Image (cartoon, rainbow, N blue to C red; front, side):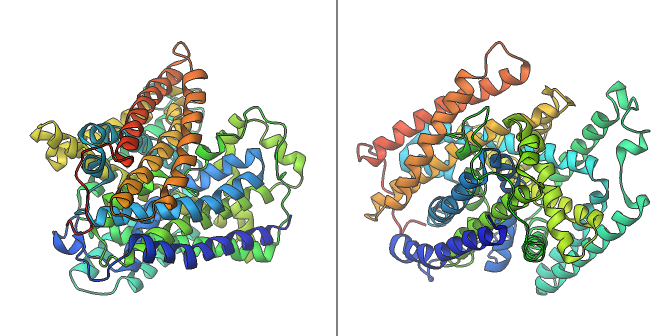
Length: 580
């Protein structure tokens, strides 16, 4: 199979989905109103509610949802062959992710910019809201742990990426001040910032004194490190602490000071990165060497494929971003199609190139099968294979391999950090909502809620001790992250379906992907968590079992309550379009 043909087919299908299907949904189902006063204007406070240009907001939304997950998931899922991964990414983007992200954004905008957790109360009842909020809380906690793990390990493995990533922070603050205080345009400053980052990447790749290599500073990988942890574990611990301090500050600052300008820089970085990889694909013109279907596997693709690839096909976290931050910044309701659906398409395109980078880097099918010898091997090595494959594509543009590797790692870290920023902010919102729900005033305070979010996230990534030492247990949360993420997406689609039904609209566009997604996810969670992870295994298995069992019970409870509401047996009041 020719890789260019595969890319063109995927991009064509997703492009047609945006051009025709999303237009149908916007005009015939959601019936967007350009004169509707959005929460960004109605509740403007210049902290969370900030009317934002649709291109800037798309940048924030896109980079918030396009973290490392649409790269990592596909890089693992090609273990079963490239064909099922390709089909799920392309069709999932058009018929599931686009509608989900677009729908949660519109639903929130029509209801005061409230999160999907709060809207569960209005649509299916108080008890469901609390259970939903707890599922969301567990999910964002796992996101914080997994993405902090990814960033820290990339900093250790690719020390040349550290300086360019951190130089982005003061550049973003400068842009925020320039745009919102001096009323300048954001495009030119953000392009200048991106150029500075890539110049820094070139220099840090060439000169070792610019590489912040903590393991090297401690005397190498065999050194004792702090408290006898070993140099690698010590470096990991230090990076986790640094990241937690950063996300604390980032999540309490007004969005215009750091979050929006940083995300806008990253949106350009994503466009540039995708441009480099797809142009490199044209020049290199590689052949797909991985099998279309891998018939010898230790884990069946059904139903695990549909939770391994979450971001890139459909992801519940996107609904949290849509309803948690993006809905509070939407300038016009008609911008929702551009921000929500096109954001999902952009992530699908990223997942597509991740698949292609991995399935073309191996010289032969046997070499692929040797690396992807088991699902565990795929999970452990998938991200590294993507970086190698993406760097190989970039060399087609005459970019030296070591610089290409640094740039690819910077892109992954930047997206993962953006997701981490947004996730911690969302966790703060949820803790505050629970404080209101249970009448605990201290939890409503911004700094108290943020402190709880940061400390619990750090604990989750540091406390579990996996097979590779301190913090490696955090990465082992990935399978449970996938199931929790997809359960959240399914419940969000169910909420949109209830809302549409009560408005007398056609809700088949959301109920059909919801039924498919919930069936696959509940089956996978029951299979993977209840049966395969024992109470009496190691500490990580125990952690996965407890988290998984809680999420499973909560989700089933919510689903039965929601089905009752959808069937019209609930006495909850209808959420009308005209409610503000």
